[in-house]
Amino acid sequence: MDLTLTFDAAYAAHAAVVVSTVAESNPGQPLRYWLIAADDVPASSRAALARAAGPHASIEYLKVDTSSVDLPKGNDPVMAYLSPAMYLRLLVPAALPPEVERLLYIDCDTLCTNSLQPLFELDMGGVPLAAVRDPFNRRLYDMGGIPGLGTYEHLDPRKDYFNSGVLLIDVPRWKECEVSEKSLAYLVRHAHESRYPDQDALNYATYDNWLRLPHRWNDLMAWRLEPEFGGKLSDSAILHMAGPVKPWQPGFPKGARRDMYWRHRRSGGLTRTFGR
Image 1 (cartoon, rainbow, N blue to C red):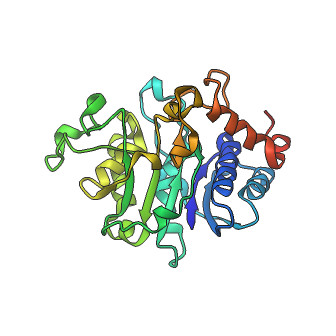
Image 2: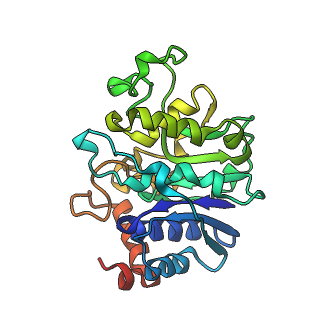
């Protein structure tokens, strides 16, 4: 299974937690990580991440020209927590070796709680990506709409809008459809006004050309799986703690998700590298 994460120094510890949860939930599976790390990620963090990925994982850091993603984060103060590293995901497909055809991108504020194998067996039907519809912004016109929506006559504002925290990518089709190029061109026009810049851009670039996945593959309402509400985390496969308050922050609710994050953060010597 080929996976990717992109991160800067601020999110390196959380990326290590993600790969640790993937290893635990996919025991014995050969995993190949194709990562893009910002220049501020030190060697010690990279080594800790490799340990967290487990004995069945290989890690390759892709070399990319980041000048094309030297873009603003958007102008919404509520989204100020977003890292500029979010744009790096757009550079991954072009940097991959030719043998990588199916790739899973995962955000650094996620936890894997189940096998990922079904995603690599899924018939994507010729679309460049598969994703989960955003439960809070269900349509292109929600929350004021993606920037420029009214000026693009080919866009139906009522079409579904996906969350980009988990992306199943058909790499050859992504390249054929020029998803990166279209996304970056959109960002040049709109990044300064976007709400969720890379996400808005990907929804524009793959308009009416993506596969909707069940919410378990990017569970943005995973609080419902907390035992106190009668659930269990393994009822989904990827839990996504989107929003400004994360499991590693004091304001995040106590419970199974927070406990799982810190269990993995404390394992494998991650606290020695990254601290608490």
